[in-house]
Image (cartoon, rainbow, N blue to C red; front, top):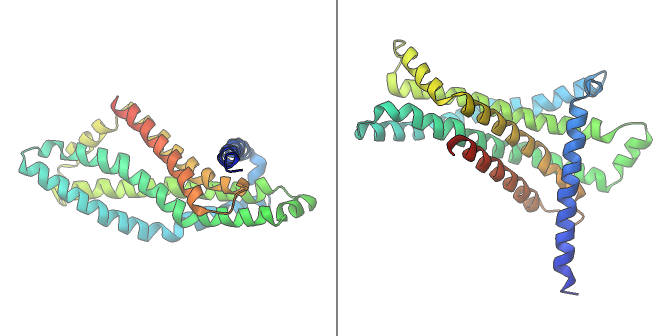
Length: 253
């Protein structure tokens, strides 16, 4: 009996990943259909977009700005101490804007928004509320899952972009103060970092993080084992790590 336990665990884990692939395809297909945003469905989608991103936007921006300011100051002072001030912009933008802030936004949305929604959808699945919605002529995937996934993806992208812009402003202020005369030099330095390849990789990575945060936690709906937030977190973290590694390969190899 103990010999069959590992096999059963592997089969159950594989079933979750298989259902996750199906869930991803189904949600992406629904997201591309205009009918998903018509009539009474659009207010539901809009409510999830707003509730997922806006309530935490200002204080997440403040926290990311404070943490970014500490890192920026360390890098700038260190670069100036070694006579490498000309490389400070590139170092900060590459480390903070390209790598740390997208990952921080993804983890923040995962913990604050998606884990709670995944648990709620799992309870609805197990209590046969989906069957009741189907019997009433509804579509649980379009009416329940799609708005949640869109909200998580939108929040991840929005927090990444806002915190990235704030970080770029802080870098300028730390290097040049409030003087406008260095703006051309600074924008040129940032533009050299965001060459076409890096820009495409950054956009794809941000989208990958958004999809991972929006969809992977929802795989808990199909997990036949005892409910566990840890398993959902591990699955999502593994996908985020894979996306990050692929982005590093695209940027630096």
